[in-house]
Length: 239
View (cartoon, rainbow, N blue to C red):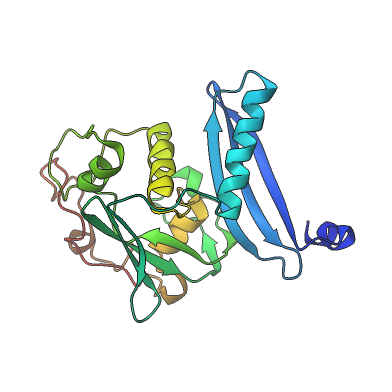
């Protein structure tokens, strides 16, 4: 793709994958620097498409996301305060703060050959991801309420992770969050999620995210009492 851009004499090339998800058109796109081949921006969007006008509106939304052409931050929003290391960015939306962690890009072996692993985690293969940012914790119910104005969760608590949300609801959440903050938010790809869970470049090769002792790292059937728990109360991983 980068070579095509070089022949055309342009600096950036946008590439998009278009698919149909249920009754909606879904576009996943990325913006590539022609000189370096680096992916400098990614975004995705979806909506019902029955006419050319609806497709044009969806395409414009994707283009806006790639170029960062979103609305200025709304009142009551503090958008992007970097810490001294440049690796943590703090946002505040209607009085609710959350942190985004920078994950430096790299290559890793994705998947697992562990006997306990699911079949869809095989075969183990090499993946490379560019630098990206990811939430320090799960999205809390307080943040979801601040952005969406409602809370669909079964277990209630401001600092509990939001649940009972669909993929489409999450797409609406990141779109609204982008409009509120003036920044582009999206869901991580599967490769980005696994890379971050493994600790990125700082990975020490643990069995689980952050160590080998599951009890100290996460909530599951043997220690959760079949309920969600406040975010950030277990040990962190290498990031």
